[in-house]
Image 1: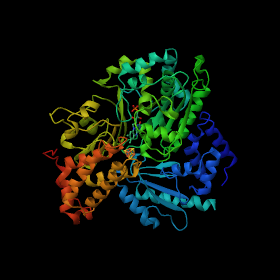
Image 2: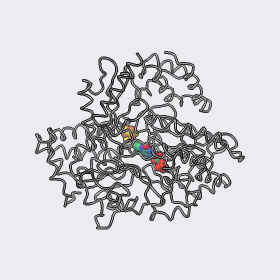
Image 3: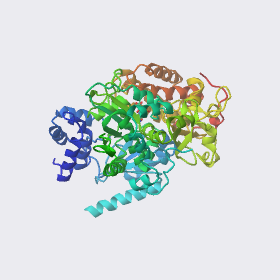
Image 4: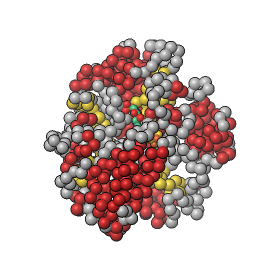
Length: 165
Length: 448
Ligand SMILES: Cc1cc2nc3c(=O)[nH]c(=O)nc-3n(C[C@H](O)[C@H](O)[C@H](O)COP(=O)(O)O)c2cc1C
Ligand code: SF4
């Protein structure tokens, strides 16, 4: 586990935001960066590394990493579909969208396709209720989902993966 | 009248030059010439109430801020926005980032915060970029950093991302999270105003509350207090969703009737496919659901308006709450049991686990609701649910327990026959053939 030069610079910038002795406040922002640098999940080595950077105990990092749903403690696919299923999305058909994705990719919630491309992660309300149904894909939201749109998104991910190989 | 979103449609308003050209940072110019206490006084006069859900008067909260000698104070903007149905802060930050930054600058000056944070839910990752860009622009133009506009006042604003936890919207959990810990709410007192971030005096306010400080400075607290009605002063952002023709974020004056809000072309524009209205949760998932027959008129037969007092008229027996303004509409074909089940799952997922009634109770409520929804419930389960929610309410460290209990209680209170139908029609419930037409008519009686 190593941070790139650029990310290391960002980490140091973040730590410098807080008053002396309060550097632990940087933990969550740094875990986000660490997860990005580590293929989308946090393993123990990575978390230990973050503990050293912030001069805190490893357990302080594990405690936090296990609390927040955005931190993945198991490997995930290259593209993680986080499909909201809470009330307002449900009223607009999220159940059908989730079922469609499951059938199309042949995976259940929490699983990753065998080619390592897709993970389906159930999500609770993501603050896009007026644009339902929706999913989070990487940094952005995909909203007003339909089956056709899901097809397009899956194709787009496959194309990107092929391009990068 | 629009005070917050008036310029939201202007192309490029996200950028400093355009925002400034349309009157941006004029409120800040004015405020920086005032004494901090005078600003607090203006906010008090405005009657502005917290827009995060609880509706606590903002000026009063500010005046509680402790000012011990030599101890830094902080302002923290709550942009965690995770209450189902609520997506107004996102809209404001995404389209009018400078409005928030200007509000934060004025508020930081009034409260004496040299280090201010925006704690934003981790999923709003792209908005972090929008805000950081606005902060950088504000800094380049002398509105942040050292010796702002020659006043000698220094202020830095940082955006801190959460990482997926509804509970971090609760102000003390938010502060814990900002300190790099799990989002476990603290026992109050001490209140953040005395011991908040790093045990220093801290004010936590919602995005919309802090943005509203800008129009308050522009038009004056007195004028602001005259907009709206009674103690519901100013304008409120409502994020409308569910089964409506025009979901979105609307800025309303709080003397608008609920009926007009749902059916007027200016707002939600009615219900798709001409369906009937079944129920509504007007203030985010935590507030009680109300059936159609109690929505437009209060129990006394008076018109119900979109404001704090009118929405809660009748208490929990026949009323609900303004909450965060997350307005969820259910049409005649929606199943209240299923909707309530998804909310119960949500609260169970989001309980931080510190208090047994909340940790265990939310799990039980979800399990029982799931059984009922999938045709495996018993009649006694309905009473059991009622019993469990009653044992959570009021018995926990933070209000998430209440927030989990109220939706279940209200669903049973107003739609008990629908729960019973699931028990007596297990096959139809399992195939999710709800036979809901039966419930489409507003219920004539209300069981309390
Ligand atoms: C479980 C829970 C979640 C909350 N989530 C939010 C939130 O996402 N945003 C928010 O502004 N306030 C939220 N609040 C309310 C805050 O605790 C706090 O009252 C608010 O930020 C104060 O700001 P205001 O007075 O400007 O509304 C939440 C409260 C609870 C109990
Ligand atoms: S009520 Fe629930 S969320 Fe709040 S402190 Fe207790 S266990 Fe945590």
